[in-house]
Length: 202
View 1 (cartoon, rainbow, N blue to C red):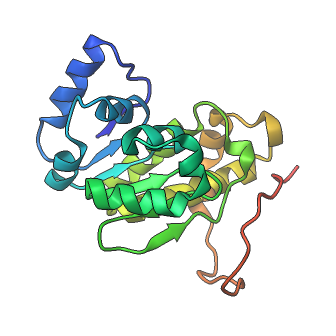
View 2 (cartoon, rainbow, N blue to C red):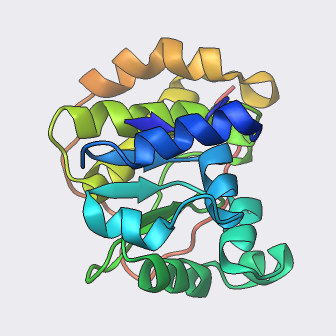
């Protein structure tokens, strides 16, 4: 179940969120207003994460509200923010940004290798969250689904090659092409390596 995109924070939205979070322990992906409602105390994010496989996908602003820290602190040390969220709420987090980061309880941290600041467009996070939900519904674990979703969304954006005018619809349209691509499964990049914000292909 994906909860959050387009949800809102009014009374009806709160009632819906409570019903979903009190329902059967099916895997859950939380984003956007679901995270804002959790930050306001409408449901217990930690207890919810311990009751089922769960992935939260905040951006820096949503993470700042969840942790009660300033957005500048989150941006200043995103690795520390991710670790704190995973430890405090005991489930998988995907912290969106450049680069996006993902971790789960007892696991390491994965770093997104695709995507550019061209993806910083309204609705792009909703697209990513939807891909996460689709992959989890097909049986992937939450951390693996988050990591694959990051790659697929970024790759579809690169294939769309729309640059600054890139829209979520462009990414969705190119998702099948990203899915059918097959790489060698290895990288020529050595470690450590530098992550940089590359321009989209034009």
